Length: 253
Image (cartoon, rainbow, N blue to C red; front, side, top):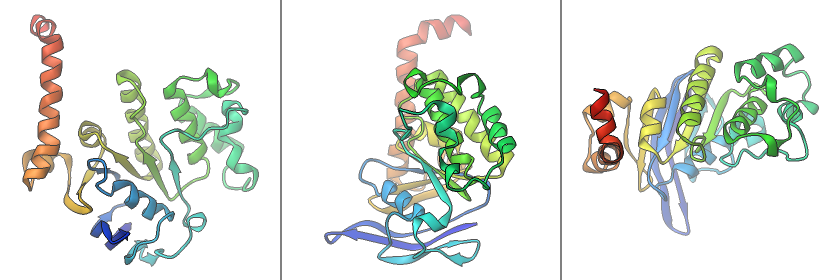
């Protein structure tokens, strides 16, 4: 279990995070959701170990890791731009991290991950020959062969179109289910958070606005901000779809 206890962070006298406290169970998919400037990226970097809190604690399995450096936490991240090496093919990107730690995953385990993410047909391709979804899967495989204790994803779906986005969402759920891996996602998109996560942490102006299951958030938003940010965005999306395809939807009913 990961516990965040009263985490606070300020820059130049401005509070970015203010007393963030949540528990994350093993194997959960958690989305950190909020508007730009809400503090969600700072919180992700704090969990990863890139940023130290001004106060508060981070506990992993009841061990205080607040001051443990990133490289010793064994939490790994897939960045929004994937950070793949363009001079290496897909397979060499996947196994790159094993060069210095070859005992973490056997060759059999590497290929189990490749099969899990359906990457076998693409292993010899250059990075510039891969689609956005394939690049995302290579980045996931490269991270997963290092057997992270927690997987962090920074806007993993933002650059993908609808069909590929749904495919990646299914694979993220499968990773969590089959590996029992805790996954923490940062996103600005309420639809992504609500359809992918076990629980959603909504942050507004550096504070916890709500931390609950998607069903609880939809049925019982606990503030005007949550209702505005979540429900109205979803309503606008639905209205846009009906405006574009209303006749077609009606004829199929």
